[in-house]
Amino acid sequence: MLWWFILACRHPERPTVVLFSIDGASADLIDDEWDNLSALPELAESGGHYPAELYGVSDTRAAHARMLTGYPASVTGVYSASDWLQIPPDLSAPERLRDEFEDDLSMAFIAAKPSMIGFEEGETFFHVAAPFDVAENEAFSTAELGGKMRDAVDKLSDRPLFAFFHFAEVDRWGHAHGERSTEQREALRSVDDEIGRVMERFEDRPVTVIVTSDHGFEEGTNTHTSNARDVFMIANLPLSNVISQSQVAWTILDLYGLDPDEYSPAPEHDSMQ
Ligand SMILES: [Zn+2]
Image (cartoon, rainbow, N blue to C red; front, side, top):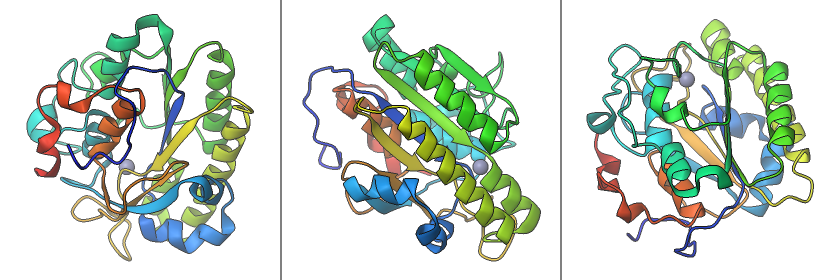
């Protein structure tokens, strides 16, 4: 496959990788606030800051299903916030990592939107979240989330880690006050602060970080379900110029030395709606 943007060795290895999802943060919001942020620009300095394409319905449930599995709705059954099935087992990057590394890898899932990325029995992400050693998902504030993320990093410091860390308040304030409102901007600055504090916990421990979003908002509104696809990707390693959100899961596998082409269904479903 030519479109993989990471050139990893094709043998399994165990890096530490953290995927941050800033729910509801559009590419424009990030750009507008760039000069007021510190953690994200610092990450981008050693890697990059890119536009990212988002396929399908631009809502939290559908976009996270793509982000964590790399598959379209026709494979996962997750078409939108209201039209969804439980993602079938063994399709997601976390499950594939657990299958490959068993107990040699720690995994943490900290999120703040149980209504959309719920992982209880019967919920969309039940199988996706099953392999995580630490899995928490409640309507936590940004500060509470940061504390939980730092605790998870500390607690799981004896082995390499894969973490999925999700922040919800940028989305919440976008809905309450609109895209790029003062409140939403402040929420993004708080998230940036917390990401910085989580990063400090890694100290000399090498970590690969990818920061993205599930959707933005429709221009000048407080909604995002029809066409809010201008998202971004920030990473502390170089990526290609235009990136599809569906490549996140495959990129994570690639970072762990796993060959995306060896999985079924094949990743070519990437551009399907
Ligand atoms: Zn969302």
